[in-house]
Every structure is written in C-alpha cells, then in structure tokens.
Image 1 (cartoon, one colour):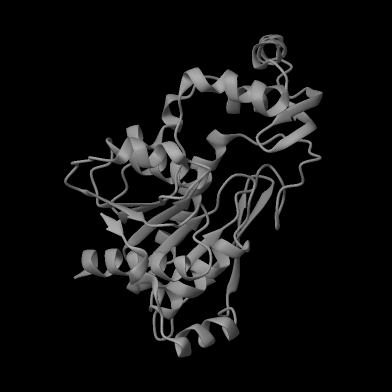
Image 2 (spheres, helix red, strand yellow; image 1 turned 45 degrees about the vertical axis):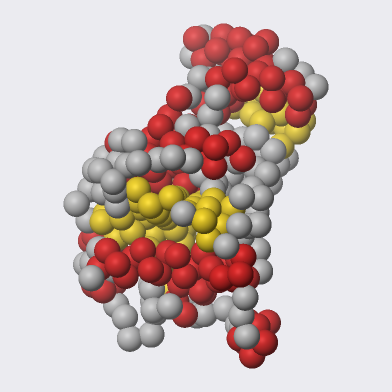
Length: 304
C-alpha cells in the first residue's frame, strides 16, 4: 500500500499547533534486571489506564527513548488516545539515558535486547495491562519481531515494525570493509580465539563496531553483532509471526533500502505493508504525523 504525499498535507492552523506542541507528561518507570536498572517512559493517554491497552516501543541501534523520533511518536500516539511505554535498552549500562557513548567499552549484545523486551512485557502483564502492541524502529523493529516470532505471548495482540533491518550474508564483510577500511574476518578470528580461551569478556582496542569507529569492544560482543545472523533479516522473521503485523517504510529510506524491495508483493494475510512516499528512515516532520495515523488506525481496527 502506497501512502501518497498528498495525504500528508495539513491545514495551516494544524501546522501551527504542531510547531508549538509540547511533550506530553511522561512518568519514568524503572525495573531491575540483575545488577542493572532499566528505565522507560510511561505515557498514559487522558482518561486511559493500562487496562485499556498499550503500545510497547523500542528504539534503534545505540539510540534511546527520548530521541526526537521516539519522543515525537510517543506524543503523537497520546494525542490519538493511545497510551505507550517507551523503554531504553540497557546496552549493559545501569539506568542508561541518552545515546550510547561510542567511546565504549562495548559489552552489550544484540541477543540481550530480545530478553529485555520480554522483561517489559512481563512488567506490563504484572501491572494489569490490557492488549499489548509491540513496536520497534530500525534494529529495534527486528528485535521486537524476533521476540514475537520466538516467544508467542497471548498478551501481545499485534506488532508494528517501522523501517526494520535486513540482512544479507554476502554484504556483511563487504560493508565492513567499505565503512572502516578494515577486513572483518581477522577481527572475528581474534574474537573467536578469545572466546574459545574463555576470555570472551576481554576488551579489544581500536576496533570498529556498528556506528562506532576505533573503540573498545568485548570479544563476545563483537561476535554477537558480526557472526552470520539470518534472524537479522526482518522480512524472513515476519513470515514466522502469526498475529497481526503492520510494517511501515519510507520509499526514501537510505538506511534500510532493502526492506522495501524484500517486502514488495508480500501476500501474508496477517501482514499490512505500507510504503510512505518520500519519507526517510526517521519519518521527520509531518511524516511522523502520518506514521502515527497509520499506527492508530491499525491498533483501533484490531481493538474493534
């Protein structure tokens, strides 16, 4: 489905309201995970409680719940009477806020993110939440998709995936070389040797990982992100999900351009695939309003 740009136009008065809009009041919630404290923004829509249902929201790579895209979407959903809980991945840091510091050390794992999604689902259930919608952006979209596919949970009624990631094995080493002017294979061999010697927590210096050049990375962290991981290909993961899925991407997304290509022609009955014309990876400005409209329509349709 193509969401055309003429649908994005707003009356001048509405634009003015958007320009002066203030963030909705959010309550910070904290839970424990071993020695770590995890945190989230709880945004209840006026007149609503957890029992009325909620959208559980996850950010992308090394990002956070209060970045412009995530905070704007939280507010826009509240405006549409949809409560939400946006959480920060710990990334192995206690009570983490803000962008992850590229200087490191990097001791987090992609696989731990799926576990933390489950912790917040458990918290919502314990608090008496109604129907849960899980939502993820970019890498977070892939992570929530994996959670839903691997651990079907009756409380989760639907899934929203915004610009989620894809994976192609033949591009892994090529892209690493392109981005960092270094070969990936020798670094993986070094990391694997450390893990084999039961020194997986040892820090490797001067290593490039994700968006962070020349940093400090634990050997087991490096392997976790750069070994062959077919489950990072979100279109393949979506095929395993049985509950309703809304997948949204902009046709001007330069971060995950392959997602659009791989999803075109999808004929999975439980999947609604929407392409927003001219939108990029972060659905900036009025594209964010249209994204919120799509999510609200999806959630409300499933509730009716």
